[in-house]
Length: 483
Image (cartoon, rainbow, N blue to C red):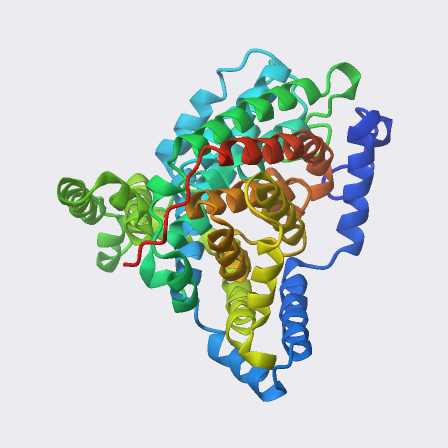
């Protein structure tokens, strides 16, 4: 049996003794982990590919280079916002009150397979609120259940279940990068804003069609998690895998000198919390609820202050933040490349003054409207997401030509965002990039989880495509609304 660090143990059951699809998926994941480069390399390659496409389209080298540099920092504000989505979720999940809540919740399931299904359900539900919170909360819940001496649950299956929020429905929830971007005009590049206008949550993630699709996927996820959980001799517990489950956190000592008293005081966090609560009440009293929910800056303000209040003191909050910062690295270094890609696609004019984005729009427009358009866009999004794992950044690469095509064929623009969102989650089930924060919490490697997550992918793919096709037929085209 392989342990978390790749060594061999003598207890439990070797993963090669798994049968059927799970065994094949684990071997495939091991191959991917060995041969696939980091996701940042794919982002670099994407810039090169788009630049070559612009040159082939007739753009001059000077135009391509100039557009690359001019667009590189177009997403500075959005990059910070997406990094804060991850950071705030981590800080809230690691706070003492939430940690105590997790310990109580871990006592709810009564059977090993039920525990796996339970983790999958909560992971999905929490991800509808915040995908960063879901990763950390679910990972800590999986560890808490694994510590129970009366429940012999498979730790790999628990870990995969903890990932299901990000692998199944996160992009259909409030932290959807694409939906938040489309609802925040100051974060939209001018070229995209001119095509789509502003789309608030009422036309994207809070439509009844989107909520129905999310509910179906959650039920499917929980059912597959339950059915695929190992039993009997196939179970591998955390102890058998050599995982240290001690989650004892060293709380900061009291002040040792006068300058530290305020660092350990609960007064300032409480006052800031009251200010934030007053702001939220004022917003809800003076603006439409959907407008408040759609405001990304307000969303992050509430989560950041909530983390401060839950940690109790500035010192505790800062210590948690220091641990959360490394999980934002991928967002910070990749999003500028996505901005450059989007700029080259939409601004580097070639022969006849036509950009690569416009050529792609013509290609997708030729597919026609209705179900065929939805399915092809979904498959394209999923494939691109396998190579370029990023919800918000990749939307900025796709959106100019996808949304222009949707307008040309009369596809509802809000539902087009949801086509992207539903398909965007699919590659997360087989690409380990977004597993990294969770793996750090669990003490596992990607190959331990992908066998289970790939099985979810097999079931999710046809359901997502069919759902997008059928539900998309209930929409009417609505012209873009400019801010």
